Amino acid sequence: MASANFAIWHKADRNFALAFVIAAWAVVLIGFYPAVSGRWRGEADYAAPAILQVHVFSFVGWLCLLTGQVMLIRAGRREWHRKFGLGAALLIPLLVVTGLGAETYSQRFYSPQSPGNLRFFIFPLTTMVSFALVAVAAIWFRANTTAHKRLIMLGTSLILVAAFNRWWGEGIYEMMGDEYWGTLVRNCIGPDLMIAVLLLYDLVTRCRVHPALAIAVPPILAAQFAEAAIYHSDWWPGVARTLAGVPG
Image (cartoon, rainbow, N blue to C red; front, side):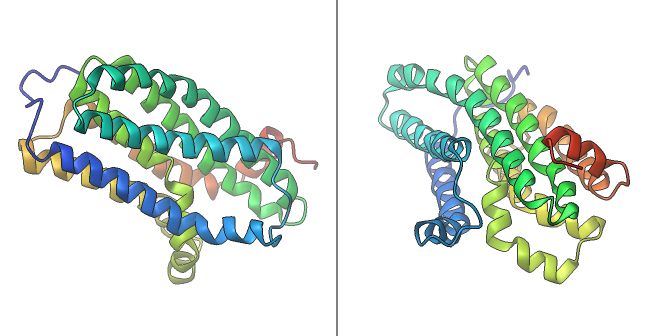
């Protein structure tokens, strides 16, 4: 993770971090507005269980914390930034546990009527594991500011997948179908675009990719190719059924 040859600061960093936060909020609002408004109108397929509600609040809390942290740095309040950063350490396990719990509840609701839905379980499972690893690494390397903030943005990009999928997933499905590449693009292209922007920003401002991203991104991409293959495998639905506790 050594970054001795990587410039700690660039004049564009402040605005890039702010632009990233704005983009994250925009994706969430566009992707989730129809579902949230539908719930308020009583049009949801099922009433939101407690674990889903906690997940929503923890997810929004993560974005609020990220926004606050960026604004604190812009205001030069680095000590406050470090203090509030402890909140991220508390939100990580909450996001992961409630995210998997909410998806498990969804599988138990939909899969008895639509067994093919079990295949999708690999995507939130892989996303939550990837996010947990990246987010914990960000906390671990918090003293390395260049690595820390890139890992935070990388982890945030990963958990935007549901918002992206709700935004354009159906359109990609209609255009590419549900074969391997269609599945891969539909479930991964959104976060991957955010990740590509992170990599491109480093190349433009530093002429190299930060070691944190160079180490973390390849296994994330490899996991995406693997999960698309698992989605189409014959053995996965049975395993997913066991993991989610869906009656046979």
